[in-house]
Amino acid sequence: MAEYENLLEIKNLSFSFKTYGGTVKAVRNVSLTLRKGEILGIVGESGCGKSVTAQCIMRLNPEPPGFFEGGEILYKGKDVLKMSKAELKALRSREIGFIFQDPMTSLNPTMRVGKQIEEVFHGHKDISKAEIHKKVLNIMRLVGISDAEKRYRQYPHELSGGMKQRIMIAIALVSDPTMIICDEPTTSLDVTIEAQILDLLLELREKFGTSIIMITHDLGVIAKLCDRVVVMYGGKVLENGTVDEIFYETAHPYTYGLMNSIASLDTDKNSVLTPIPGTPPDLFAPPKGCPFAARCDYAMKVCLEHPPEYTNLTEEHRSACWLQHEMAPKVDLRGKRKETV
Ligand SMILES: Nc1ncnc2c1ncn2[C@@H]1O[C@H](COP(=O)(O)OP(=O)(O)OP(=O)(O)O)[C@@H](O)[C@H]1O
Ligand code: SF4
Ligand SMILES: [Mg+2]
Image (cartoon, rainbow, N blue to C red):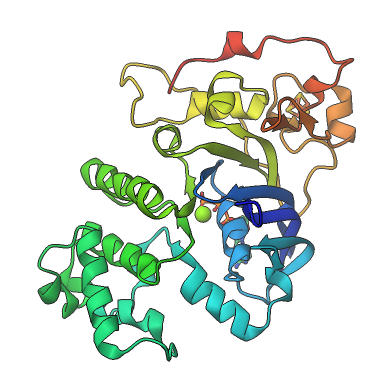
């Protein structure tokens, strides 16, 4: 455990895209860690940089137009940004599995799904065709695909949305990865299949100690699955901590807003969800102070001028908000919060 207690360590990562309209500063100074056997949630509104951050880990963002502005991504102590092509290939095909948001666009419509799972082993010389075939059928059964032999020969259009997502999950899992990144893997699925897939992820962690990053809008998913949570906004991490700290000791006004605005699995259908008024910051020209200042009920003059530093509230919990400054007025955020999770 000691050698790589942090399986993944992202330090001050900044990633931008050059476009005709200017440079989109998609990820700004993001730091986070993922430990062995841990499930880490990343939550935040659309466009806040969750997918771009996750894709940086495997260098999956198109470069160009994307480019790294700074930072390090250490996987098992080795910087992904300095890896050779061969090392990156091994990272993608053996170490980390990625489950994408939309199975419809990620599967090849012209290839049988079994073959698409087998593709993961392309170029692997230490495993025979028969072993690969056996592994593929096993993984298809593990992810809950019945009649695996028949499904193996089918094309994506012959499968339901839930089945396609299971194929995507099988692709991510077939090489027994140490880590899986799930980018809103259940968004397009109904609640029963969603629950089955979440149970499967928990089982993988339990049985094989797989580390998981779970990107989601759904705080119910976070509560069910995750050990720790990272809250992102405008390309930055605004708060992170254990699930209990984020839910019950919420420190950042944005996290409060998020909790009141997002429906979750357990949301009482009669409870009123209050959207956060306003829109996220323009990532072409991010505000120079706190990125949330334009929408924050507690914004002070300093918030507009200077970005808040992180304050460590506990060993795991930190928040980037001027309210945590020792000289700041004491406000009771809790009074404004509505219970939604
Ligand atoms: N290829 C690209 N070219 C230009 N801008 C991009 C590209 N990919 C992402 N972006 C921009 O980077 C920012 C962060 O996008 P990202 O996809 O990470 O958001 P997200 O948090 O995953 O949102 P969602 O919840 O909708 O999936 C957005 O402003 C997006 O428009
Ligand atoms: S730093 Fe200021 S604007 Fe930003 S969340 Fe805290 S109080 Fe609100
Ligand atoms: Mg996304």
